[in-house]
Structures are given as C-alpha cells and as structure tokens.
Amino acid sequence: MLAILRSIASAEGTFALALLVAVTVLTALGHFSAPEWKEFSLYVFAVYTGGKTVTGAASAIAGRPAAKPAVTEQVVTVEAPKL
Image (cartoon, rainbow, N blue to C red; front, side, top):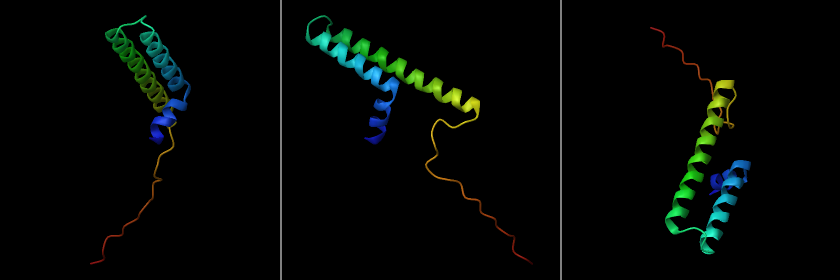
C-alpha cells in the first residue's frame, strides 16, 4: 500500500490519477462509453509505466540509482583453512 501511495505522490502519478478521475467523471456524465473509458485508462497506464521505465533506465545509465537500496551491502572475508 505504501508503494502505491508513493507512486501517486510523484508528479507523474498525480497527473495519471487526475486523468483517470477526469475520464471517470466524463463517463458518468455520458461523454464517454464504458469501452472508451477502458481504452483511455489503458493508454494512461501504458504511458505512465513507460515513463517510469525510461526514467529508471536513464538513471541507471547515468550511474546513479533510481532509489536507495533497501539493504546495504556487507563485505565478508573468508579465510581458507590451513592444512
């Protein structure tokens, strides 16, 4: 649930949510049919996920992580047993 709230809190998520609310209201007012609502929502989702993918790829290419890693790395040294 927290991940959903974080994605909605981003600028892209807020815009996508606003578009979905707008098309839902227009559907309720009779300006869109149910199949048109479904198709529009699909396009909004596709553009949103495509944008997030491109942003993540650009961050990876630039050499900085898109988000902080959840777990830090620990270095462990193991010595071979003496014979």
